Image 1 (cartoon, rainbow, N blue to C red):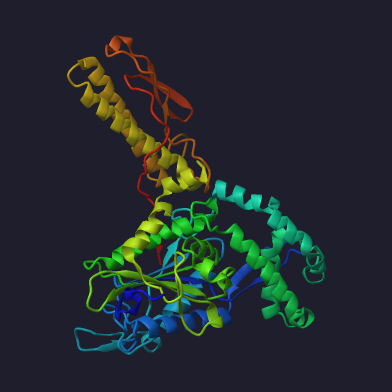
Image 2 (image 1 turned 135 degrees about the vertical axis):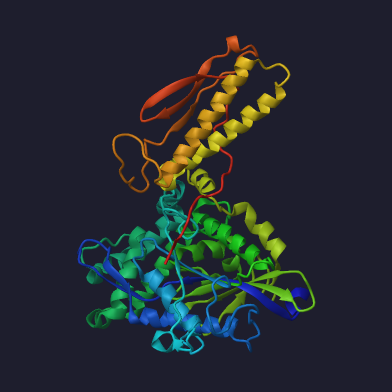
Amino acid sequence: MTTAANATIMNTIGVFVLARHGDKQGTYSNQLSYTATNVQLTALGQAQGFNLGARLQERYLKRTSSTYIAGVNPDLYVDGQALIRADLGDESSMIFDTALAITQGLWPATNSNNITLGDGTYVISPLQGYQYVPIQTVDPDNNLYLEGWTDCIEYNEMANEMNRLPDFLTRAQLNAAFLDSLSTYVGDRPTKYENIYDIWDYMNVNYVHDKAFFAAVPGAVIGQARDLANWYEFYTNGSPDPESILNIGGKTLTGEILNILNRVANKSDSLKFVLYAASYKPFLSFFQMTGVTSTHPELAGIVNYAAAMALELRQPINGTDLYVRFTFKNGTQDSDFMPYPMFGRKDGDFDIPLSTFNLAMRPYAISDTLSWCNACNTSLARNCDVYTQAAVADQLMNQIANQKSEQSHSISPAVGGVIGAIIALVLAAAILGLLALFGCVSFGRGASRKPPHRRNSSIPQIVVRMTKGKRDSADTESTIGIKANGAFEMMPDHISVLSRTPSIAPSLAHETKV
């Protein structure tokens, strides 16, 4: 069924694109491991990225295209109109290099990239007008939206649980002989089903780049390994249940997508074109959260090199409502982006009101570090301890303020002084914790750089063990303290027991701009 919105001619207002890196190659020097060193984007991967960028340029930046985005300069990159980011995770530099290749296709060299100096000298940028497009790198230690699964305890436990489920055990048993036979090609490296992605990745890289390996391994073997890896990765990196922690990669990505689409929808914001480069994992979760693979199960697997999904924000020519359309291009396997329905809709019913998309995805989106810490049940990674303490401090001060208001007619000056002191100490602890997070202050003997993902014991910790006393300050009991460097200082209080459930605090993450 085709709705009225889908039958209407629409303008493309803006787009969010998620792209996977291109072809890679590395050195497998350890004969017992699939871990490669010196992993780099190959010339093939560069070409794949460039061709994807050229297709995006034709689709969104070419004035004659039906999906041309008005408000974006078609020839020159203009800061503020476009935003490019690349994951800086464990994939070496190949994701960043893919993003760079994509931008070369999006904004190719042009004589329009010139300047006339005050003395009349006319200068064209090097390489016949090469455009140096800025790319922001996204460090997963500071920003979670491209690698929500990293250091997530709950996700790791759930993914490991997959190895004990009946479906997994059945597949492992049915394919045991095939997996054992792969030792012919992978040597002494493990060939258990839980290693299937590493097995296929190793074989695929060598099949593409090693002439002897290509001659020795039948294509059918590569295909069967890919099929097994598709199933395993799809169901360990996502779930049809949007609440599942297996969707943590999609949840954090969704939080960022909603933010971007709402920026694009804002007429006062010049941002219209956004591209993020990442690994294959966020795709798998997002496909399942939006129901794309329930209608098109052929997409249920590892996306190809240089694959890209695009969420287009569209508007009827004679209307004001905004709609979201999902399109996808599976690397060089597809010649162009194709639309796919979301949320169980039928083919042809591609355009969903932005408000509906927001309502459907917002309950599952994670857009701040504290929410991620709670979902992953961790206090060690991504400075969760600091964010939690800041939230507790915020909640404590709100509770103090509320009780102070309720008791304003009967509170004694002595108790008022105690409350004021508690507020000052809690606020100071929160500020010191955040300063320590950003390296602006250190505690103890000498300053040292805190290793990633480890609790910094020098950060002041708010310790709350409270019992409610009588209104008379003489009957209150001292059970609040600030803990720093192992020392614990007690303070009198007149506060009821504080819940340990923290309120949501905005993320203080940042990107490094290149």
